[in-house]
Length: 422
Image (cartoon, helix red, strand yellow):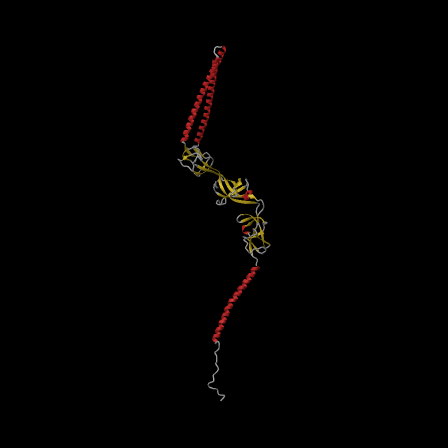
């Protein structure tokens, strides 16, 4: 039968589905998790980008804040502060004038001494012996003068006798009793006796001159003997002592003598100051000055410019000035390092600005001025740098508001908000 199907006829092949239900659910779950992770990462990033964009927009529209300080017109006088060195008005090395051995020391370092006070006593045996010899020699010369005067008296008598004989013989020659030859002999005797008298007078003069010379020698030795006691030349303080009992003392420094003492008077002091060439025209003799030291608790000593060297040192280009200071309580000591402040009138008005407002671009020194809320770059000519402040000689009037430590963002024309420095 045609309707009968052959038992051997093949049935159509049935394929299994591509994804089972469980596998499809797993894939779907993974896709959902991945989408969630992707969304959770992109959304915060989008918010951050939006916040940054908004912040940048706000920054672009916000006015920057700057700290400012006001430029000030300097006072009509200027203060010049320079280092100085203290020196005593009187300072003297003391040497012995006589040679001998030091018998006793009467003063020591730091002692306050008065004028003519004995500092040391010397034993001078050689000087004493020389003085005795000189005095004996003087007595000998005085005796020789007496002897010469006796010779002079005898010579006068001889001259007188010769004159009498000459008159007698001359008369007898006229009467023809004596020959002319006898008259000539008597005349010669008168001349001899006169020459002897002149010789005696000259001897007296020489003897008297020798006495004067010897008296001067005795006086010199007596003066040297007075230096056996070395005395203070003025009121002062012993600052150096270089002697001890028993030392052999040689007079004066020229002969290699020992400096016994060094003394000084501190009542008036000299302050030596090296003034730079740029300010010497502002400091004149008679001008007031003020001396102070950092370690004296702010104490100041009034002084006055006494003199200047009127010449510059070619090495330092400075001129030396002397300032006199009264120091009755000896608070200042020679050798101290001090500061000297000179108050001098200014030749022209200047403006003082803080040192941290300066800019030094290639075009020259400038400052950033806040003018009407905007930045204006102003070129200036600066003078002395006083540390925290700087003198401006040209470019500012003295009432400008200047930006402190301007940053790179501060440029000409930029609008800023000024805040005064505290």
